Length: 119
View 1 (cartoon, rainbow, N blue to C red):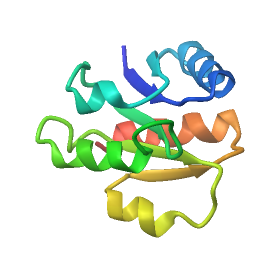
View 2 (tube, rainbow, N blue to C red; view 1 turned 90 degrees about the horizontal axis):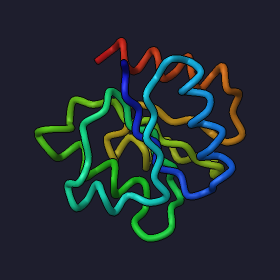
View 3 (cartoon, one colour; view 1 turned 30 degrees about the vertical axis):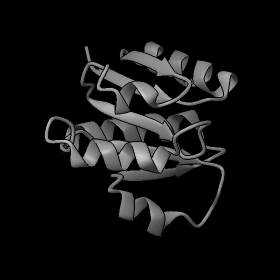
View 4 (spheres, rainbow, N blue to C red; view 1 turned 60 degrees about the vertical axis):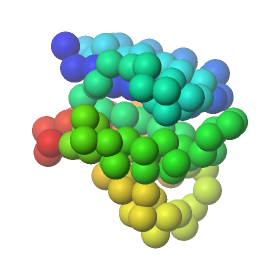
């Protein structure tokens, strides 16, 4: 079963994404912040979905950390954000894709499938 790690601090969005991926046959794990990533306390998934604006450590910092680590640099990272015009910052962080909130569930699943198949 494909694993997806979701880091989103808005409980409603986190729950919605969790349900979406569970129904689509994934094994999602959701977290309200990325501290566990920086501490190395996680199983490596097939995809990371990270909100840009998190309490504590910024989602782009978490992305940089993942992309600089040999064990996770090959895992695709999808950044979610309600802030438009972040493409340059997201590219600098090494993210594989960006999805602006609000987004459709179908678009999120299609992008996730594409990222997982491409890596």
